[in-house]
Image (cartoon, rainbow, N blue to C red; front, top):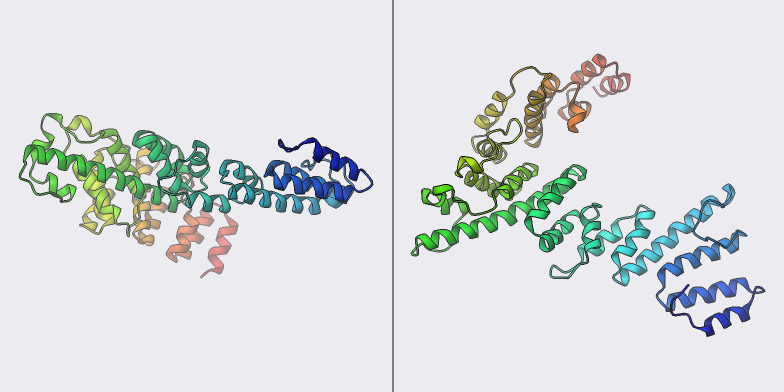
Length: 383
């Protein structure tokens, strides 16, 4: 019950007595609203509904003892009450508590709006950041808040854990944030080093311009940013879309990385074993810089047995790249050749790709080979 309720409130309720149950409950609800006791209000609203339906009043939020004929009515009222109380908590700035109500009814948008509206310089409690980022309610804002409060290293770790659960659009948005943040930090550090060595150097310039022809910046294993952070952010940048301005920044990051001492150029999975040079080709393909040469290079990395994991990974990278470049027919041919049995493990739907490419004959062939009557029929009727 309301923590601020005094004896007068109890006396008032007692005077109304059992002869006036509706008045008792209305008075209780009014008191809880006045006290901003929103959790108590939720219980009281459901208690009043139970009283109206002739149900027991103890444990008012429970659904277990609600008879089947009354369940739809009570569940609807439950949802409406949770929405109301969640909104009242948001109005009081209690985002984590509001989240409990909105999550229960699977409505995340009000919480997302509240988090997005937080000022950039606001001091935000940790549970809000967790809701935004780790629960995916407002992942971009959550990433910005996490970056501000935890720094780059912890943010990269957190993002690695969350990437697989994000939508492609949210992955791209998070990649934009990280690429721009790391690029700005690295460019600033390099500029400082250049001015220290060459005091007459004019200010400004891109990272590419700052490192051009200046081998001394990398001499003796020198670097200007945590090399593991650079590796991770360049990897994240593969989530960017062709229209993203951050792609050019990602290319410059990869070009910087390619000039580091070999001991700081950590290898990746195929086809990115030669990490930075491979990413340079990837970003160039996305930016339409020597695109055909870059795509040919990725094709050359698909070698060996189609059943081999590295071969399939290399094939998927190129399939995904071709899809991003809207070259779906080429992507489909490659997927059918190398990923007919494993496409779904990579999050790729060959039937959907067939439809996107307008290749319904390929869909029928693929479906027949797998004994898939449903997609065979879809391909048959979509001609």
